[in-house]
Image (cartoon, rainbow, N blue to C red; front, side):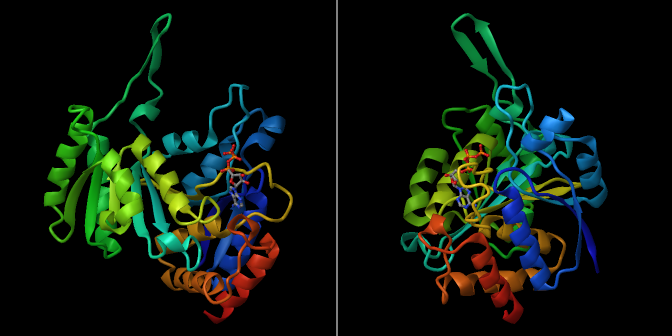
Length: 335
Ligand code: ATP
């Protein structure tokens, strides 16, 4: 079966890593027709908006998108495309697998956890005000509805992916009402999923556990801000921004994207590491139930990072984006 997918190459290194990703998917045998749309800082110059309406229409129609990094012009009144997409499409669940690749950060070899981050509320609801000169207030908004759907998502994900445990990360000892609501809802939802072991950890203790014994956490479910911070910590453990993938999932649409930004410092040089977007595309293939194509790319990544020790410059190697992608595509062909 062929899938029509919205592709937003994005800004900076986006087009380079998007090209590499298209090549890897083609080599995997997945049948995909790309509907390419531009969004971001460069589009804003011509169109006066970072997110032209046809981009949203395309994602609503196709239900699945692959997105490169998108910059937000600073100080020009533009809203972040990433935040707008999450809000408009109600992509409430941000899934970030933190998984090491062979030989990259050997101190954390074998790390395999998944962060499921609530994507729509918490301190990101944008409810800020100056109460009086010199006194600012940010409102941390937590609702039972959003706690319930993110906890449900995390338990269902754990069941589907044959994981053992879901750990809720919170600070309910201090924020008894808001984080307390997440904790209470988590306990209720856990009762409906007896095959999965529920666990609870306070966010500061969780940060220590990340560098001591992260795998014990297994699947993490947490609020927006804690999830944001822990995701970058996790990326650091397994080799940095060049390799960590992500997905934004809602009830009606899903947008797959790398965790990294547009990396203007290396844009156009042909040296970006495409692994993060390629791994995001692997998540997309599994979402589309193209498991064989996804598994092929996963096996090929293990091979090029392991036996071939192929590395782009961000990981201390010498390969260009094209050379790395050539090696990967050759490995996919025989995976
Ligand atoms: P933005 O404003 O779009 O978030 P940024 O430069 O602030 O961009 P990132 O794009 O995430 O943030 O980059 C942080 C650092 O990591 C930069 O030095 C960048 O070159 C490097 N980097 C990020 N992604 C990659 C990648 N895929 N390959 C190689 N280096 C990367």
